[in-house]
Amino acid sequence: MKMRNAALAALALLAAAAAPAQDNNAQAAPRNIAAPAAAASAQDTAVPAAPKVYTLQACLEEGLENNYAIRIARGEEQMAANRATPGNAGLLPTVDLTAAYGGDLNSTHTRTREGASATERNAYDQDWTARLSLGWTLFDGMSLVTNYRQLQLLRRQGELHTRLALEDFVASLAAEYYNFIQQKIRLKNFRYAVSLSRERVRIVEARYHIGNFSRLDYQQAKVDFNADSAQYMKQQEALKASAIRLNELMAARDVGRRLAIRDSVIDVNDRLDFAALRRATLEDNTSLLMAARDTELARLDRKKVLARNYPYVKLSAGYGYTHARSAVASTRLRSQWGMNAGVTVGLNLFDGARRTDRRNARLAVENARLERDNLELALRADLHNLWQAYENNLQVLQLERENLEAARENHEIARDRYLLGDLSGFEMREAQKSLLDAEERILTAEYNTKICEISLLQLSGKVMELLGA
Image 1 (cartoon, rainbow, N blue to C red):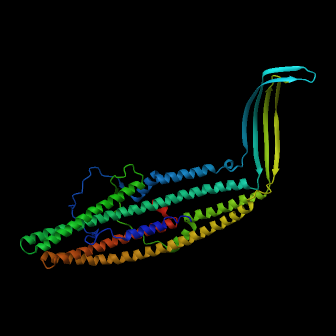
Image 2: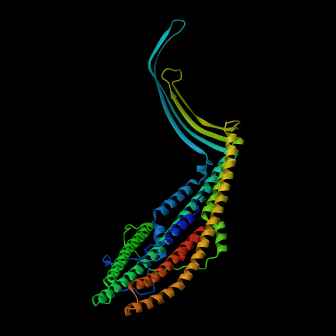
Image 3: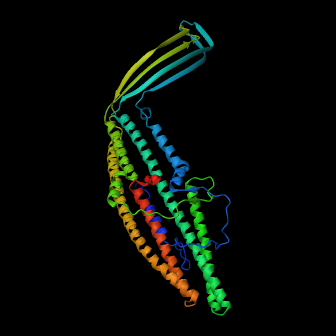
């Protein structure tokens, strides 16, 4: 069965993205809350040279120019175009030029009835031949014409293969681009979580020394700080892995180079229209168009099988020159040149496999049609699944934005009470975790919604619009 674009892969990616990337002790922090200037990890290093700042369009343009899979697809498309010629289909005549030389070295002894005898030793006879021949099949039941139509169809199929590769690439790179933004925001959130834990350690340590807090409070604050620091370092690794993947998709020479992008938020498009997407999917989905081409190719194969029931007409013509030299014959030298032409008409009456081939060709057409219908059904299912996920994530996103405001207010109240000594460290940690959890859920919902959006555009054949977004 044909590819269903990357819809199923997108669903798998969506499911993977839904799993939180943090543990229970350190969730993401609000993007709108200013992070402290001091970083919490010793792994932060300054880079003297600022990297090039990319937008999504810049990443796509560089990738479309350099990506190896795209270049291979374009090369295969060009090969299919090169094959789509009348000569390659057999519609043009063939012209052959041949030359031959032969020689015989013989010794002979003859005796007549009258008793006379003659002996000839090492007689050398020579022949030179040159010939220009033309052969042309004028009619073969339209099989050659069908060949040409197939080659033209394969050329268009090659264009669709390239288009499919382009769409898969654009969808993959766009998804990774927004994943990079997600990982970057999450790193900022973890950095903020570390700063909160560090401040808590400072407060607890100061009060522990004056006897306001117990050693248990002090040790728990240190444990939470270390857990947040470890999570921050793990997130640095996730961000670097995303940058490497982006560089790989863009076919950068240095896949480990630093990558800077201009966008700092995941911009969600909440204005997609299901009716328009469904119509575009059924009319312009690349895999569906390729399945329709396959059905046409199967019909042409059947025509070629049926063409064997018709006679064939072949034209032949030639011009030749022959030069013969004999050492013993009565004619010692003979030259001949001239033209010849002829027409051959034939009909294949029986070849032992025609009936089977006709049946199989008819079944191949039916199978191709069934595969196309099956693909359309699968695309409809993918479209409904993705749309349901898209709408659900939009609703979740709206709900979590409301929750974030409450979590912020709760955190501010808890912080003030903690500074006054009216709140325990455990309760302060819970308030902090609630705030970070709320922001992490928003980030996950934004990314999942964006993945659904990209997948819906790819399914409907509109993903290339991201180049001009």
